[in-house]
Amino acid sequence: MNPQLLRDFPLFENLTDEHLAEIAELCGTSEYAKGESIFFEGDEGDGLYLILSGVVQIYQDNHTRDVILSIFREGDFFGEMALLQNEKVRSASARTIEKSTLCILKKHHFLALVQSRPEILIGILETALDRLRDANKLITDLTILDVRKRMARLLLRLTEQHGVPSAEGTLIDVKLTHQHLADMMGTARETVTKLLLELQNEQWIRIDRKKIIVCDMARLRATVDAM
Ligand SMILES: Nc1ncnc2c1ncn2[C@@H]1O[C@@H]2COP(=O)(O)O[C@H]2[C@H]1O
Image (cartoon, rainbow, N blue to C red; front, side, top):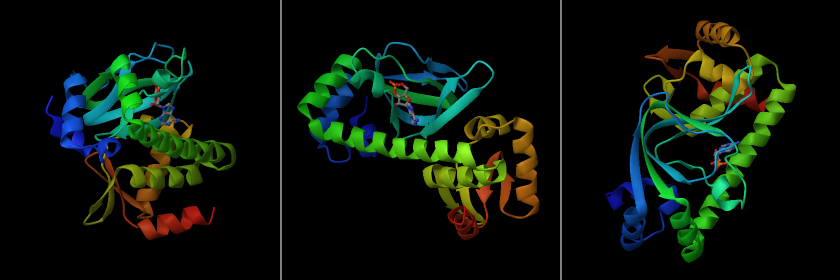
């Protein structure tokens, strides 16, 4: 694959062109259709996945419904845990939300790479710790907040992770269904539909081609801070 495609990954930002070329040699790319499974919780870890384009959800399937732990997009990586934790399997499942192109670094190549370039391991650790912080917040939200406040927190988190400025405010640049949002905040799809309608009527948000625009970020931040 073209090594310059790896340039956009924060994980590799300090590597030279030469190093990127070495990694690119070891990577394979795969195309996934919208809604296609990548791996399942409990599978053996075969490799590290880097998102070249598209959107991927990380989720746990709890029989009655999915719980979405995170949503990743281009520039993000996932699947490091089963590779770094000896004898442990995939901690969650991964499935595309949009058609995606992924770059896969096989386990033995990944392990050799982090041994020769420990700075990559530090980058992975920093990202994993950020994800742990997010997970902690999520546990607290799910435990103590009512659904309207959980929705406010979720919108703020999505703007931080996937927000781009738009004429009307901050656009959350991923097409998420009401079911995806429900699976992220531990509620029913019908509750999300009702809440989104309320928030639109109160002019907090606008929906444009299945994407949410947060019209007043300052108000959203102030509301979340006051919780
Ligand atoms: N709470 C979480 N937040 C974000 N990403 C996660 C979370 N839990 C697991 N993952 C990612 O999902 C991947 C599932 O496969 P692994 O366990 O190999 O590695 C995992 C991480 O990359």
